[in-house]
Amino acid sequence: MDKFIEKAAALTEALPFIQQFRGETVVVKLGGSIMENEDGYTQIMQDIAFMECVGLRPVVVHGGGKAISRAMKEARIAANFVQGLRVTDDQAIGVVEHVLNRQVNPHLVEIIQQYKGKARGIHGEDIIHVEKMTGVDPATNEPLDWGYVGKVRSVDTEPIFAYLKSDIVPVITPLGKGPDGHLYNINADDAATAIACALNARKLVFLTDVPGLLRDPEDKSTLISSLHLREIDELIARGVISGGMLPKISGMVGAVKSGIKKAHIIDAAMPHSLLLELFTSEGVGTEITE
Image (cartoon, one colour):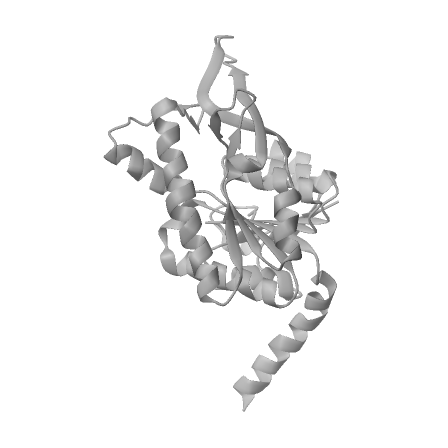
């Protein structure tokens, strides 16, 4: 009997959150190592189907880094990185487009549909307008060139809203079109942030391979559950926010400053972490608020 009471308690705990978020847009970014674990991302797509069923309006933005790396290796295209970002030349952009638009995207859509959710893929280049990413090497003052890697300039939200109004989950690839008409690769975190801002989403959620922001990276008990914008600079200065976490936190800060009420980082490896973060009082990751 106790287990049934626990199930009922979980449902009643979720009720006020479902009521609060009904009709609200939540952008979920999926990528990294979780894309190598089919059970893991299948569970996440089940959570997405649940969210849509109870009245939220989820939007999925996904990457596919390791699948792209494998496909490039099979095509005998050498991986080249500049300051940690993949250089995408003419040959590589064709591989990136094929993996994201023709393999990963339809597979994620199919999983949501298997859970009786309605979902459709959107190729990023149909809605995202970019400019070529440029930079300067601080050591040599020489220009840096990442090839067909873009920085988001604008997002055409009309197709996304059309799907959301029809209770369809948009599943979007991080690709864009430049002013030259060429296809560009986009960092998936940046794409998700830009889309969330353009949609004026209620929440932006990054699913990662860590529990959230930890004061001590070696100690999961040091998870920081909630952060205000005013605390970010100090944590960066102290080195608590560094490495791969820095661009994610920067994206979250930009999203909150643009008007999104909360941005979250949660552990994709935890079963149903997305539902636990959104529909329980304690949550399971790190949230940033104004």
